[in-house]
Image 1: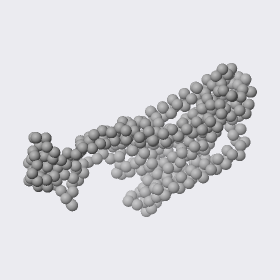
Image 2: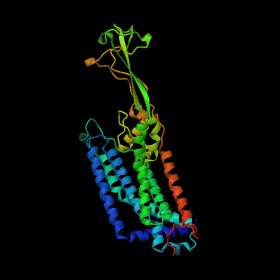
Image 3: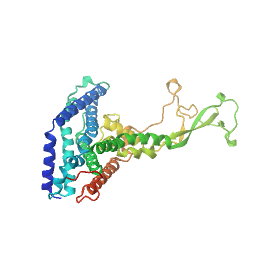
Image 4: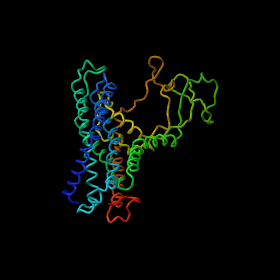
Length: 385
C-alpha cells in the first residue's frame, strides 16, 4: 500500500465531511451530552474523596457511549454510499488499490471519531480540575481527595481511541459487504449493540443456566431441638459432641444452589465498556476499594472469576467455640479486600479486544473481496459507474 495515495484519499474524505453542516451540528450535540453526563457524574460522586476520579471515569464512559452511537453513522455507508453516488468507480480506475481505498475510509472514519474525542476534552479537563482542586472540607468521611492517577488518564484515553477505531472498522467493512447504505448502517449498529448489550444479556442468561449445588452447615445448642439421633446413623439434624463448649450441639446441613459466574464471566470480555475498565489501572483508597467507575466495574468482572464456596458454615454459630460479642453475634470470617480480589484474578481485556479486532479485520477482508475490481462478487444491484 502506498502511504501517499492513502493520505490523498483520507484528505478528500475528511474535506467532504467538513463541508457538511450536519457534521458540526452532531459535534455540538455530542459535546452537550458529554457535558451533561459529566455533570451527573459530579452529582453521583459529590462529597466523596474520589470525586475527581469518579467524574473522570463517568466522562470517559460518556464519550465511549456517544462514540459507539455516533461512529456507525459516518462509517456504515463509507463504501456503498460512494458507490451509490457514482464516486467510487472513478477512484477504482486510478492507481489506488482496493486495500488502499478501504484503509483510507477506515482512517478517515477513525480520525472523525477522534475529533469527537477532542471535542469532549473540556469535560475531561473539568473532571481533572475538580479532582485536584476539591478542598478537603467538602469531602465526607475522608481527610483528602483522591485525584485521578496519570496512568489512568493515559491508558483510558488510549483504549477509548482504539475502541473508536474498532467500531469504525466494523462500519467500513459492513458498508463494503452490504449494497444498501441504510441496511449497512443498521447492521453496524446491530453488531455494536451485540457487543455492548448482547454480552450483558448472554452473561445474565448464562448465570441462570449454569448452577451448582451447595450445602450450608449450621450448629445450634441441642436443647433447641430436643432429642435427636447421633450423626453415626446419618441423621439430619444430628447430635455433635463439642468438647470446646459446655453442651452438645446440633448439626443441621441445608442444601441449595448457587450461580456459577466463574463459568460465564468470559462472555463479558468483549464488551467495550468492560475492556475499557479492565485495561485501565485502578486507583484505591486507604481501605483498598476502587475510587472510580473503572475500578468498580473491574471489581465486579474480576470477582466473577472466583469459584463460589460449595461448603458453607454459618458464621453466627453459637457452637463454634468463639467468644460472643455484643448482641450475641460473632464476627464474620475475614474476606479479601477489593484490591486483593482484583490482584488475585486474571486480566481479560486483551482477550476481549482481540475478539473485537478479529471481528473488525474479518469484516474488512470480506469487504475488500466484495469491493475489488473487476467486480465478480459485487453485491447484487450495486452501481458500478
